[in-house]
Image (tube, rainbow, N blue to C red; front, side, top):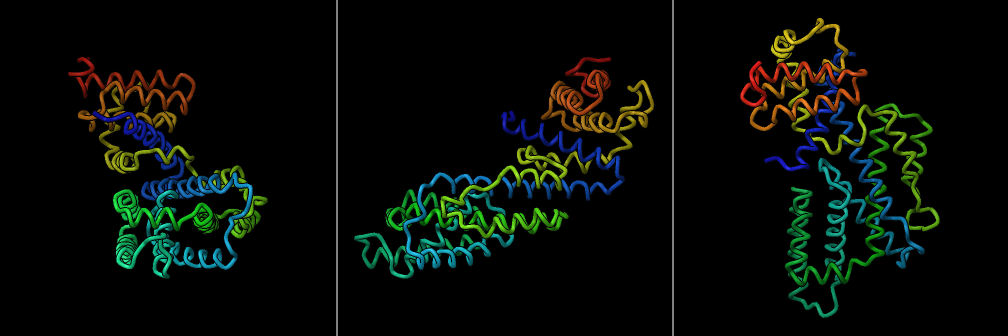
Length: 342
């Protein structure tokens, strides 16, 4: 049985598949290009989400970090080198990225001789060995290694003691600021490639240079970033919750089996298929695909109800009644054991 989260992911996937199929009909663009655009939007909006999460973490402090200037400079140099590796082909959420950066800083602190009070030479060597091993894993596996680090921190006392003793709140603030600025630079590059205005790009570039460790300037204009992204993306933040595999299935298989889908639809219509609104046509394609292909995991009533909800939100007035009637007739043919015979 599918859980609520999985079902919700499919609901979002249907919505964005409908929008992609509508875009495909209206523009004549290759369906692979439409799919790629939506997936790229998802990556862009994920970056925005992670940047905003870090911005919120940086706020709320009354004073700058109680660290010497040379200590902050050293930390930033370590973090800058680590961020270039971590962003090279790895898709890390902000929390995992921060954990990974903590690991890199911890390794450098231990390597240069810093360790918890009472940590002897043998424990120090154990720490160096463990952290170097984790760094290698991190370079290869990214998020997997960062999650393993959390487990090790809970299980291995020398590593836990080093983590708690050496990574102060102020150091973590520096880590979060470095990660936040790296997300902003990534957003700048992506939005530049999408044709964002020069003024907005200049604002984002300036934002990536600000000192967010200073409480006086630590507030970031999240609303402006949201509006900027909305101008260049087809999708909205809901795509972050979509089941990407199901979205891809709908966007790929529906155009590939369009002749069969239309042959199933046409006998149940009261007008030519070409006269249907493109949104309703896309919704019906999704419904027929699910009734045809997903008998094992999508009950007929779920397929119809999901189509009705899409038609209510995006279709013409009373279009949901039309969609309901068409799919109900098709369900009685394709799912006779569930829906009853016609």
